[in-house]
Amino acid sequence: MNWELRKLPARAQVVVMPMILSLLMSGVVSSISTLKAIGWAEVTLPRLLQAWGVSYLIAFPAALLVMPVVRRIVALLVEIPETPASQRRQGQA
Image 1 (cartoon, rainbow, N blue to C red):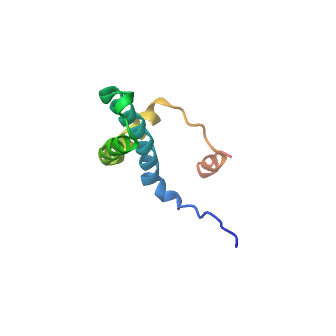
Image 2 (image 1 turned 90 degrees about the horizontal axis):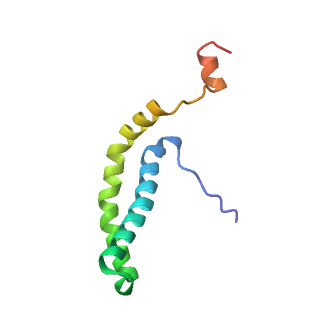
């Protein structure tokens, strides 16, 4: 049997990008915060996962809300080169 991973459509990027970003960032930040608050000796996997879960419940909706603003700021700061397809549409090629 051939197990092929089906990709999501391109329009899903609007949700998948902030989902993965907030998952990773909330994991890092909540782990550091938990370690700092209770110390290495008291840290257990359930405590880390509980802190991560609470952080993620806040981080994901926040990322969905701020991602459009971040994209606009990045577009103002970063020059994006013209692609051949966009040049053809503009009649430049």
